[in-house]
Length: 86
Image (tube, rainbow, N blue to C red):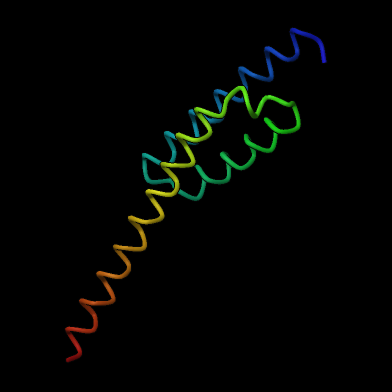
């Protein structure tokens, strides 16, 4: 891969990771996760994964936090539903 191709690939990767982050923050969780997985796969293939590990970790942390938030919300709804039946 030439230097120019590598620079373009790195630029595309950063754009995808930032877009995935914005999608997750805006409530489009599934789309953001899908784009994140695609971006990390491309990063590994282009051997750029280690170079962008900070951004990757940031988005991964955001995904994990959102999953925890969703599971807590679901658990609260189950508790409320259980209280309504009792």
